[in-house]
Image (tube, rainbow, N blue to C red; front, side, top):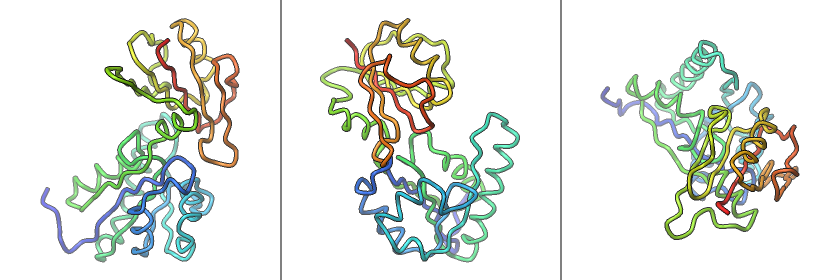
Length: 232
């Protein structure tokens, strides 16, 4: 559908994995320059993305904050209903010619919930632009002080919760994202595959934890857990 130049632009802005110093200059500029900021969550000030961004851009606290509820469930009907509702909220501002900066954790192109809103908005002719942030797995690798890939090694980025039971038998490095709630199964899968691994929980945040072997990763690891398994 043809874009409408009289409408505002919706920006999907990655704020990085947790450390506000990893936010890009562009992300900070867009937050400063625009008055309407969409934040994932029912209460914007409680959202992790907001807490990261406001440390880098204190002016964010004085912006008009729009809560966008993004439920982390498997009920597709509920998910689509809330995504549609979120897009409708954003459209109200875009139709007034206002830009909307939509904060999102990590990078705006990697397993990003804003993607669902992007598809709805673009299908209806709205203008959308993605702004990269530091991906969580890159930040975690740096925290572990290891290269993700070298020479001709491939990199496999896997949404673990959606790939239960698959063997990790490919060459190179595996990044297992979305492991929370299934960590015991992920650890068993790593053992079966004969792979060692490290994990970072809450990378870049005050609550950050680092584990350098599979057996030391807690079974009850929280939502922001990421596993990196290098080829032995």
